[in-house]
Length: 548
Image (cartoon, rainbow, N blue to C red; front, side, top):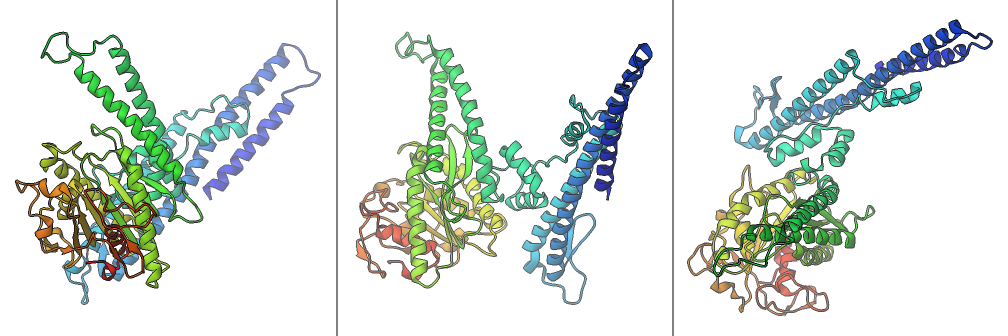
C-alpha cells in the first residue's frame, strides 16, 4: 500500500537524519575543514527535512484519497443496487434510464426515482472529479518544490507540516441546487469532508434544504459569532457616521438627510437583538445526546438577505421523526417572537407524543418546527393586504418542505403544515408550488384571511386532509374585503375544526380560543386549548381524534 511505503520512507529519512546529526558532531576534529564538513551535514539534513515534508503531504493525500474513494464506491454500489432492483440502468455519462428488459417498469411509476438516482450519480461524478483535481494539485506542488516544511527542524515536524498541505478539500455545493441535489452532494462526501464544510464553510450548508438537520444546526451555530461580529462592525460604523447628525431636518417638511443611515442602523440593531434571542433559545433548550427528541436545532439563520432577520427552530429531530410539523406565522412576527413560537412547538410535540402513546403507538417520534424563513408584513396595513410578501416567501417554504422530505431517514415522513394568519396564505401558496411532488400530507389553516384555494386538490393535498379553524371573534374576518387571498377559508370545502371549549376523548377539559392569537397557546395550567389539541392530533396522524 502506498501509505505504508511512504511511512517507511519517512521512517528511513528520520533514521538517516538522526545518524547524520550524530556523525556531524565530528568529535575531536576542529578547524576550517571540520566546520565545512559540519555545514555540509547541516545542508544534507535540511534537504532530508524538506523531503520529509513532501513525503508527509503525499502520504496524507494517499490516505484521504483512499478514504474518499472507498466512500464513493460504497455510495455508487448502493445507487446501482437500487437502480437494478427497480428496473433502471446507469450509463457511464451519468444518465439513468429504464433498462431494456422484458419486465421493464412503466416510465411514470419510476420517474421520481430515476431523477433521484440521476442526481445521486452526478453528485458522485462531481465528487470524483474534485478528488482528481485536488490530487493533481498536491502532486504538482510536490513536484515543483512548493510543499513548505514551515520551519521544521526535525523530520516528524516536517512530515506533519507537509500533511497539512496534502489533504483533499471539500467541494462546494451545487449552485442553486434542488433539495434532492443538495442531499446527494452531502451523501457523496465522506465524514472528514463534511466536518470540514461545517467548520470552515458553514455558510455553504446552514440554510441549504436537503442537508441533514444536525449538520445545518452545527453550521448555523458556527455562523452566529461571525454574523454578530459583522453586524457589530456595521453598527459601529453607522454610529460613528451619525454621532454628530441632527435629530431631523433643519427645515419643515424636508426629508432627514440622514434618514437612510438611521433606518439602516435600526435594522442592524434589530438583527443583533435577533441573534441574542436565538442564542437564548438554544441555551434554554440544549441538545440531549441521550434523547434527540429534546432540545432545539437551528435550521435556518439569515441575517443578510432581508430587512429583518430570518430563522427556523426545530424541536426534536426532523430527520428521524415519524411526524414533522412546520408552523408559519403571520403579521408582525420577527425572530424575537421565535421564543414564543418555540414554546408552542414544544407544547404541540408533547401533546402529539402523548396522544400517540394513548393510541398504542409509543415508539413514533415527533418533531415540531417554527419557520420564519420569510418577512411577514410588519403590521396590519397596506402590506398585510398585499400578496407580495407571501409570494416571495412561498418558494422558500416549498423548498423547505421538500428538504425535510428528502433529508428524512424515514421512507415517507408524515409532514403537517400549520399556517397562521398571513402565514396561512404563504403556506397555501407553497403547497401549490409543489416542484417534483407534494411532500406535505396534512395542512391546518387557522386565523386565516384566505388560502387561494377551495379544496384539497387545489393545494395538492389528499382528499380530507385540509383543515380550517377560526375563533368567532377573530378580527381576521375583516382583513380581506377585496378577495386578495381567495375565498373565505370557512366557506371552502376544507373540514372545519372546533375551537370551542370541550372535554376531549382523553378526558381533558380544554378551553376555547379567543381573538387572533390564542389557537396554539396553552392555557394557564399548560393544557392545550381545543384548537392546539386539534393541531396536535393532526400532527400525530390521528385525525379521527380531532374535535369537529
